[in-house]
Image (cartoon, rainbow, N blue to C red):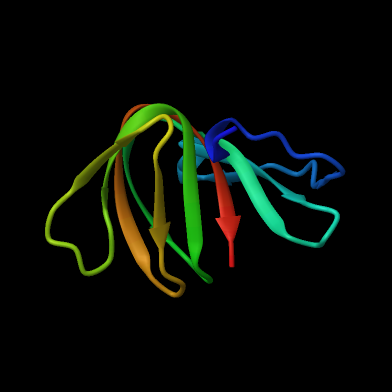
Length: 107
């Protein structure tokens, strides 16, 4: 099983939605039994800039996007099955070409 089609057992789900960019991105935070925090959600087509508080890895399970990571000079296209990492205390730009489904791993 690859990370983008993983399932998670024994989770605690925060039922409050995280809504960003007037509904352009919606996610839910969940915690694994070992205390690990993750979020799962969707980002709708558009251009956005996200900030990070800690390092993140985004696993894409649907859709297609272009990402400009901190310090990079070129956009990189990603799709379902891809992952990309973002350092903590940084920001990155994303252009969503097809609605993204994702799981974000923190820390």
